[in-house]
Image 1 (cartoon, helix red, strand yellow):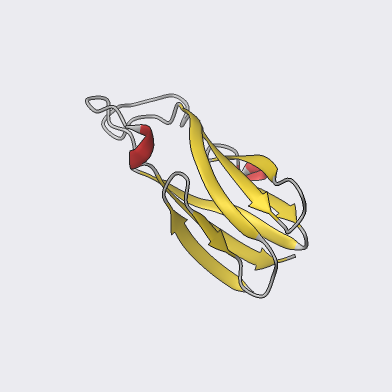
Image 2: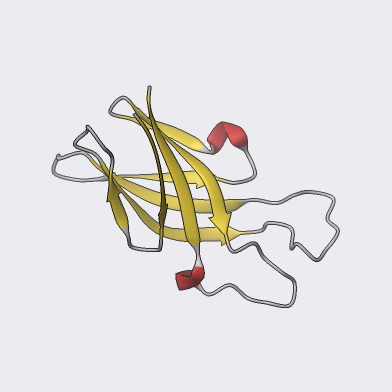
Length: 109
């Protein structure tokens, strides 16, 4: 299994050959350095996802753009990795919550 998909807030995707579905809930914080600024630190954005595995209640996870050790999770033998979060911030523009797009990759663990 090696699947990549892009989701909008609220959208879910089924992971091939599994009972798992992953849903992009929201970006709960975005402190990434704007593309038109100079920052000492790159910042971080926190992407909240929910994994459904056929059980009674889904499991929520936070994936981070600024920390590769927290950019992926393993659930039910599947590694889900945050690949990209768009749009990238600019100092002159506020990103509306519905404008975010997250690209995730699912691989066998």
